[in-house]
Length: 450
Image 1 (cartoon, rainbow, N blue to C red):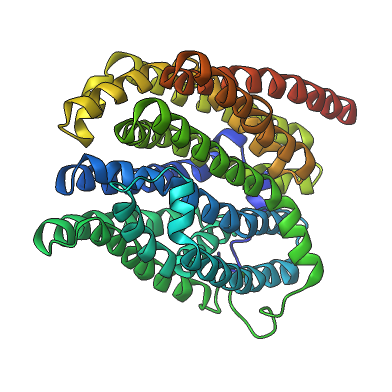
Image 2: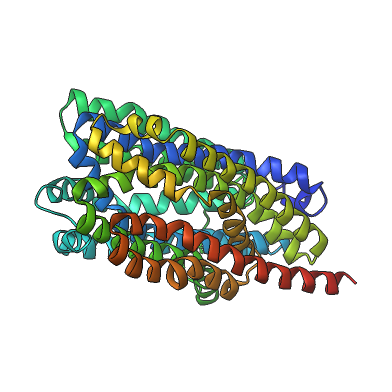
């Protein structure tokens, strides 16, 4: 963002135009990010085998845990930066950038150290068997060694987007996907590196994109750039960032617990291939979730800026438009999951038993999918305007208040099917809670406007 291009348009331009301007690059980037993960699964499924897909699925809890610590810094700091820019506090906005950089390095190194020490016991606890453990181990060793790079790449991309450069954030993500897609078949099929080759392709792609991001923030022509003095951690910036980022942190932390329960339930009642089926279902649901997250990322700087500027009608308008778009996306996911599950599963594997498990999972998980977009946007909305406690509560309702009890109860009566049914049941209950909280917040906005 140039010094002449300060984001004052966020408070004056038409909301629909702004949402398109910010959300479309984010949607493209998040869709590309989802495809990034799908590419790994597809190449591993066809190049290594069905057990490798199960091994990859076992790494999801650990990946969610890493993402939890990454979002604790990146999401919180990017939201804080949007608010600071709305308040025209540019000095603090630059300090946010420096603090993001340092915090990601510190947290990334700490996570890598602990992860490498306890890797195999953790994977066994997640549900790994003697057949699947070698695949999960080989993949996570590489991912953990590159964890600092991953944290920096994701953190700087979030700040890049919030500082008025959604297109550049999109380019960074797309570049990462394209590089990963090119390197995966080379490392797996040509070099014969197996699942480890897929992990190397993932980290190497992030390294190249991170180098470009650092070059952007090193340009002194930009309003937000690296400069002397911003890398010293400031207590208020750190605490404010962590407070706002606590919501996505808790959500990812809960996701880690949820996936552990899902994997353990599927292993007990369905075996290793049932875990692989969840890996496939998770990749497909993740695609539509990432598109909604792209919409949320487009909404975030607009809502944050206008809330900071006390332009509450504009805050309400961007929320309504984002909910509408998200519902369209998740309804499309519902139609695909219900009408063509066999075709979707076949993209990842040719193993008939794995396809059978996957089709069952897709049809059940997608049954209430049209309402998921609303719930996701509502949670992100409270986070975007700095209402961390409400965002945390909504993040926890679906997973801890509803999904965990279902996962602990249903499988005892209907086996592996109970694991699948737990997910849409929790979606429905969490959506009702979100609707109630959003209605209360709308009432407050109307009172302020009056």
